[in-house]
Length: 97
Image 1 (tube, rainbow, N blue to C red):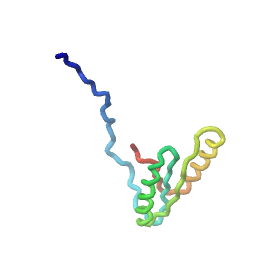
Image 2: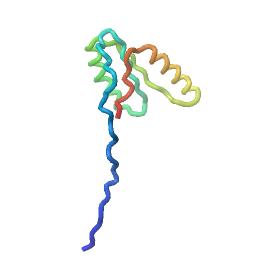
Image 3: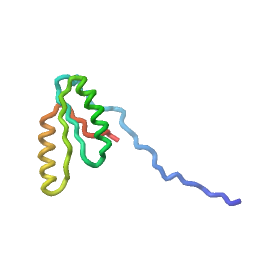
């Protein structure tokens, strides 16, 4: 009987820095921005869950859905992003995965 070697094509996971970054501090009375886009619709469910918890902690929410990144819509998206960043104290912009 012949033998074969099966190769595992998966890469090793990247090394992740254990430092989660600065603490946002108390959220009561602060504005938390929730940024999403239309590429991963299930993230909207995650944001809905987080929104309930953030509001229960006393935070005000500001949601923003990013548009396209090119052309006239890209210019509009960049301007909206600037306003979004100016309007919030803390922003959640993704899952970090």
